[in-house]
Image (cartoon, rainbow, N blue to C red; front, top):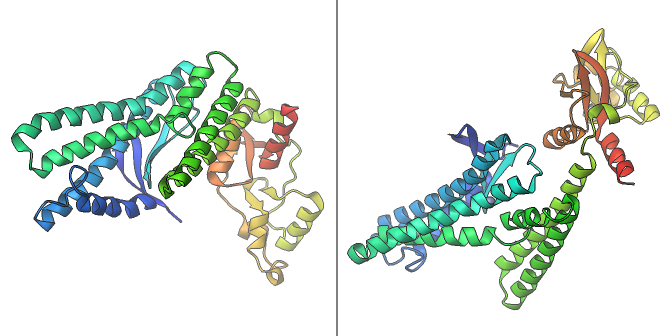
Length: 360
Ligand SMILES: [Zn+2]
């Protein structure tokens, strides 16, 4: 299912709206329209004006979130990191980028740039508010400017919480990584983040705030995720696809029946095979087999059920890229191609095994 739509491009980066964002936007508009001043517009007499300003505030808030993400992206691009997209979702935005540099100095600048943008926006709106207040105190425009100023300051503060996946967690790690190895700095930052999340959760229970408990939970999960991904990236550092690929690849002809293939899978314990007749035609996997009803498997050919789109890496690519490619596309293996010929195959199992061996 497609869960997000692209609305345009800024600085060459595709901007997407996630389905959860489209659901939450009217809720935000409603909250703004029905909250008392200075947080909302409930005192505005005209219903149309009230809801118009509610909607305007919600859209402007997310535009500010987008600017925050663009702040991160701008610095990342300056250091040669490619930004795949920025997606706005339920609570905030996510910039999806390739290869985040593991240089603490760059990471620090990157992590600071988002909250920096939010802080600058917050101060700018609040200054405008101070200018407008004496002459236009009762106007919803003045209130809108105040709300945006306040929310940007909160956005900045919230993102500075010293826990992954918040920017503050990255700032903390970058700071620690100047004094110790990267992995150790990550572990320490994760530990601090988890402790913070735990304290926040307990506090949430004490004051009976479901939102705080939810945020604490989200921060705790985020911290654990960061530790896992960093561990994998650090372990696979310098490892090339060539080092871990399976070289003697068993391939199957497109004329083989699906039931013969199922038998082969059972014997060889491999779940995916390249399909070759003279040249590479596609890839066939266990999930392709499973889609054919058992009674049909004897007369269905591999050529009819295989995936024709071939996803491949080069032997000199970094192993971590092969892993990223697999998890992004949710596939179990990629072919290794060199000068148009297949030289091997890398599966998720190969990668996990190498990670375990390298860690020893
Ligand atoms: Zn940020």
